[in-house]
Length: 89
Image 1 (cartoon, one colour):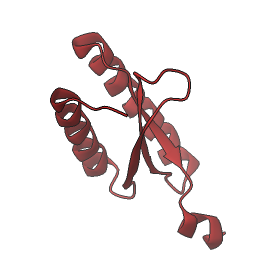
Image 2 (cartoon, rainbow, N blue to C red; image 1 turned 135 degrees about the vertical axis):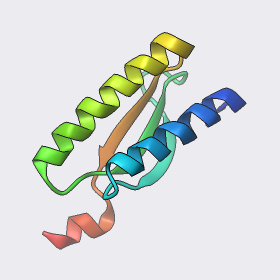
Image 3 (cartoon, rainbow, N blue to C red; image 1 turned 30 degrees about the vertical axis):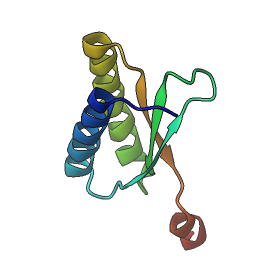
Image 4 (tube, rainbow, N blue to C red; image 1 turned 120 degrees about the vertical axis):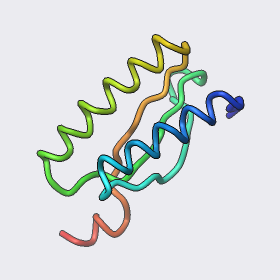
C-alpha cells in the first residue's frame, strides 16, 4: 500500500478531528480497500452505543465525500470491533 505525503496529511487531519468529536473512538490501522487498492480505509474502534455509531457514520460520510470531491482520494472510515470490546459483552 502506497500513501503519498498529501494523503498522509489528510488522513492525520481526518483522524485528529474524528478523535476530537468522538473521544471514545481510537485509530487502529490504515489499510487498502479490497475492492480498489487506490482507496484507503481508516480502521477505528467502534463506539459502544448504536446512537454514537450512527453519528460517527454520518460525520465520516460527509468528511469522506468532501475529501473525494476536493482531492480525488477515496478515504473511508471503517469502525471495527476491537479485541477488548469483543470480550466486554
